[in-house]
Image 1 (cartoon, rainbow, N blue to C red):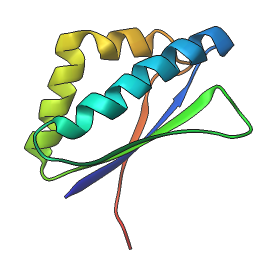
Image 2 (spheres, rainbow, N blue to C red; image 1 turned 90 degrees about the horizontal axis):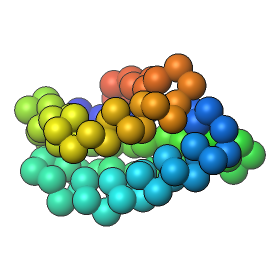
Image 3 (cartoon, rainbow, N blue to C red; image 1 turned 180 degrees about the vertical axis):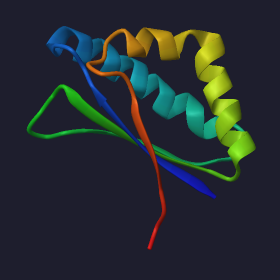
Image 4 (cartoon, one colour; image 1 turned 45 degrees about the vertical axis):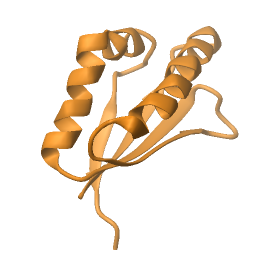
Length: 95
């Protein structure tokens, strides 16, 4: 199993609203993808510009399949344009 924690910070409140819409749609569609175990979106309570995605996949191949969906749909490019510093993605392990 592969688990990722992705941190996103929008440039401003207007971009945060648009990013939130993108993320809500991903929260609906991504769990239907092959190998998705978990795909949860969070927004910081005290900072409306900051979001986190916690995602778990059965395999590296499944995770790469999701990345391909994001690239092919143009969502990754759209979301990246709204961010300060791009995506901050880390592999994490449960202890």
